[in-house]
Amino acid sequence: QARKEWDDSIYSGKFPPFTRENIASTFRNLHGARDDIFDRGVINVFKQLSWDYKTNRPFAFGKRIVITRMRGEIKPGRESGGGPTLGHVVHDSSARLEDLVRVFSILEGKPEPDHRGGIYFAVSAIKNTTDGDAKTEYLSIRSFRNGNGHVTFTRPDLVEKMNRILANHFPGQLPHAKGTL
Image 1: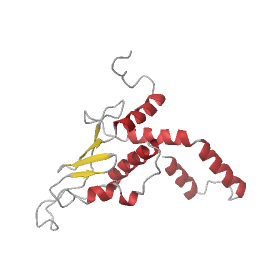
Image 2: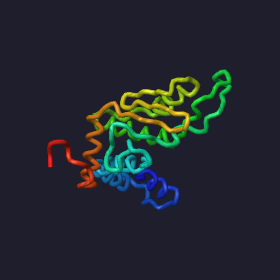
Image 3: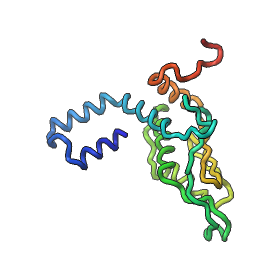
Image 4: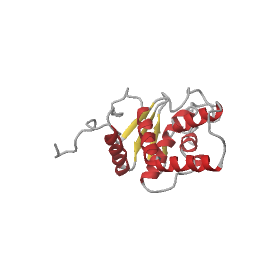
């Protein structure tokens, strides 16, 4: 969202003069707001989930989520000897999962991974197979013929950190842990 606002202001010509002072000020402001920007990113990824599935809990990340339209229309594929393929990967869906991977990386203290070998590549690689599973460091993705993807988080500790970010911004929405009031 912040990136879109930035792009819109640049394309519309609504930006301060290009001076050393303005550049330094912009980067100081971005650096000072980095925690808030990160938290907004977690919240935006969370808001983009479909709540049509019981695994997508409307108050927290669970151990698994369902991504609608992970893949496009499934057609008989020439590449697989005439058998059906799993369909092409929808860029918006893979981008949402890339956002989650970036969040996990940052929460773990690692640099953001290069997206060019990420989710889109991993899910595309299984297009012409009968195996609908793709795995990355943080996610296990199961593709289905209806185009949906079931994404299981492999790091519950990082999911808990994301849920704490949500709880800080939406107090009282997360259920209490077992044994607490």
